[in-house]
Length: 221
Image (cartoon, rainbow, N blue to C red):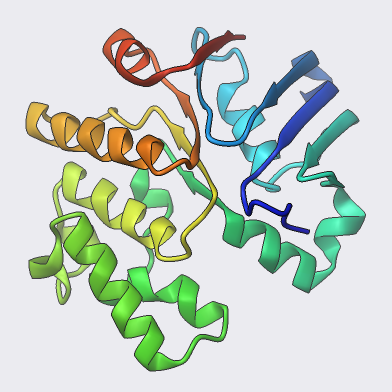
């Protein structure tokens, strides 16, 4: 499934999705090139989160297509457990509310969960987990319960859990929501480094500064 350079190539064609006969997405067409940062903007209720769920394989469009690295991401493809594992390893999705993502009793186990699901050795899991905690400055939180953390700390833990699988594409839904000034500055610096590494990024945001600093393109719904 991965292309030769190990980076994603994402194409959405004529995509449509509706909840209970209420149209949410109509005739959506766009592509994202490897290493590109695309900002997704639009009013609340325009379908940004729904589109992100589709891109992450959590929802299937009623019509149209979603192609990732020349592979049609549809129900049949995702029904195969091995296909699903490989696909979700390569795409990291940070929900707007990190509480939805956090379910382990300790921060360490939260970050280690993905690598363990992939069948890594415990030594490899330990190294990757510790590296991700160090990267995001949360090593001292390793034994704490995620639900006792601040909003900014929860978001860092959720992001570390995603990065533990070293995804090629990072999808962030309103990543500044609930963050204080220091946490926002930290996240901007992290995303600058992420983009510089050649990884691909799609962010739903209302923050003009984020788009001014990082975005190659802005798409509006």
